[in-house]
Image (cartoon, rainbow over the protein chains, first blue to last red):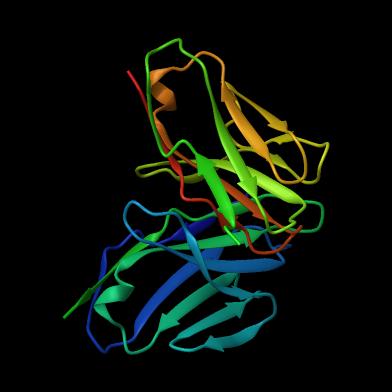
Amino acid sequence: QKEVEQNSGPLSVPEGAIASLNCTYSDRGSQSFFWYRQYSGKSPELIMSIYSNGDKEDGRFTAQLNKASQYVSLLIRDSQPSDSATYLCAVYSGAGSYQLTFGKGTKLSVIP
Amino acid sequence: NAGVTQTPKFQVLKTGQSMTLQCAQDMNHNSMYWYRQDPGMGLRLIYYSASEGTTDKGEVPNGYNVSRLNKREFSLRLESAAPSQTSVYFCASSEIYNEQFFGPGTRLTVL
């Protein structure tokens, strides 16, 4: 059973702070990693993808991948109240698997 | 460019009734997926279609059937709805092994 684990939260950070969201996965052969943001009552929206070890930055968002330790993280700098949402980590396993496995999500609350 | 569209947005059924959820994408993606999302359970894959003409079961296929009508359209059918199928249903599409893009969802209640 391929698993993706996230701390369910809620994670509360003050406005302007850095929010750090973490995710671990069980399948060592996993190849592709994604972060989605989901506002209450809305559908998941892709915000970051990462495929190789290291950091990937896009605006205020940085994704970090460490395949040896089997974790992927998302940093949100200068957090805004509009970042308050549930963040879903998703992982494609090895070649031949078409299934994207999602974690249950971490709820982030940015306090003004 | 509408992305992924789903109909209907809301539906209430009685136990035993049938219905079909429709999904269409205009991104020319090969792969399409149906998920359900329940509180505390996260997103769970019901069925997927890796390419036109193929369909495969996901994690929770019981009580559902699918049809990949063409490259754009992928429908989900509930033959005899049960209260346990009350959920939010999302359709998604992607190129193989790439990012999945989600539709707005269908909120289904089975009484």
